[in-house]
Image (cartoon, rainbow, N blue to C red):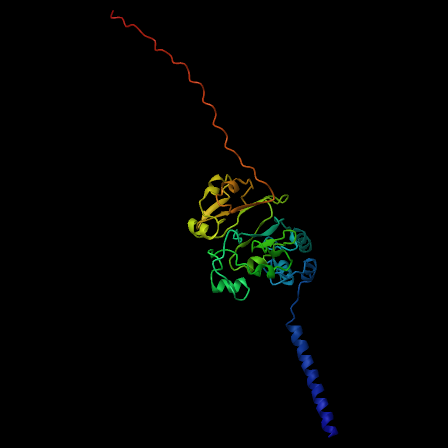
Length: 304
């Protein structure tokens, strides 16, 4: 009995030793050398692992940044330009500064503007609600009000306004990671430049995504864009286009003059960070006084 136990221990020990040797050589042969700069880049990252950069997390971003030929297509929205400067210094690259961005809720459908036509009594999730039907109001494009965007935000930058029933963005906390954009099944949240220049926060946007024809959209929401195109006609910078009965302002072209704000008949256009001034048309120049009539000179014709 004792010998059996001893032999069992010996055999197991020998097998364990052999397996350890085999695993050692396998690990050595298939060992993947990792660039030490990946660890350095990861250390300067914010560690949010939010996915706003387009990668699974900060480690994946660091790995992609190290392998990339340049940093033109790499950007960490949470860390912003300061973090990207540190990454560039580690990798020996140059990096272009990008304009800071913020999440914008493009829906005017408050409880006042968009009255309910029915009541939802299911699981409180915008994603679930969107899969079941168009919503509680006559607008099939607007906010569903369940707060999926709030739950998706890791930085506490979003909250639901109990009066309007719409999400509100706290710009001081928003990192423009884009989690709320992905969470919204109605695509009413968009990332836009904070301002027309890095030094201001002046911006103008159409707070509506309804693509129904004007009369239908206005019936569903008093503040809906009706696609009339008046805003596009007064824009001197070609920043506004109208497609599918909906106006859109290109923030890269917009100079935040605010003239479209005054022209919009429904109040669908919002301005942030400034009070626009309406530019009155210049009076037509006064007509020049008419020149006095000149009497024709009579000439006598001689018959010779």
